[in-house]
Image 1 (cartoon, rainbow, N blue to C red):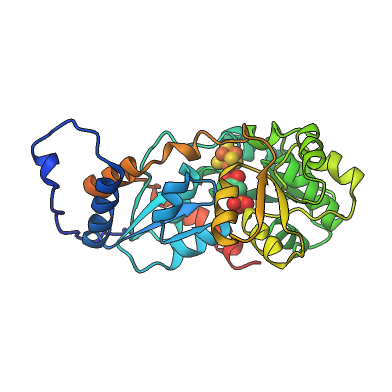
Image 2: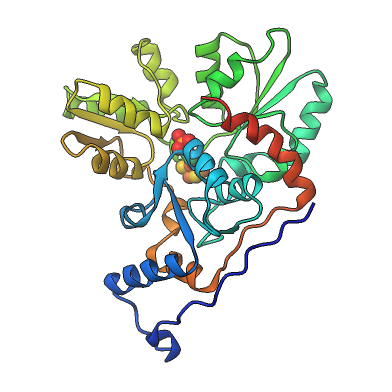
Length: 331
Ligand code: 13P
Ligand code: SF4
């Protein structure tokens, strides 16, 4: 089946672009251009919680990987501008192939997704032919096409819990998320040895140092974090949260202060949504350079040029759709 992209009218070119002036636009000019272009293009801007504050501020929706996938699947817009990383834009294409999906900077990749190839999954399956492959959404479209189920940090536990007891599970690519799923479900799984460079670098000492400085603060820990197993051995009742789960927990908690143990952009999202509480980053160096590649300027240029586009070959897309639909149906 082929999908045709909608015909989009040509946008008005800002006067300074017609003149080809190499002037750096002001923030106000960029915001004005984005406001006009998003209407002309009938575009929706979806931003992950780790995006820069100014990018979160212009988004129609800010959320975690699960929420973003659901938004991408159901949008009525003609164009999706993905303010996130490459696998997220690919996921939008797989779920909603008739849309034009733009990733404002194609260099925005993911170190965790880079740890696993489709051939790696095929070799793994060949050694474990009866196993079910569950992959985190932080993977390429080709890897998803080899998977039985996809999951996010928001629903990995529910996805694994629902699998038949007597079937081996091959879980990839994040070993820290896998450890969390094993703890929560009691299921044994064969685990791929991958990790995200940002979350892996968060040390237990970073957490204890902030706890000493803010003794009343509650911990909000993401399951991708390298520190999570050691912190949990000290505080076994502690819960781990996806980025969206952190919002719900901070809203429900009696605490006024929180140490946010994940990528630093999450502090922006929490502070915007819950302004009467205080959110402290676990470390100022917990920063994903890929997420920060998306800027107001690149969003504006993407809307203006309808480039760079992310596409997925149809034969890969139809296979990757099955595990992704199972993912968005759960949790
Ligand atoms: P969630 O937003 O789904 O919790 O994932 C975090 C992440 O690292 C995305 O790259
Ligand atoms: Fe990938 Fe880690 Fe960046 Fe998330 S924070 S996009 S997992 S590199």
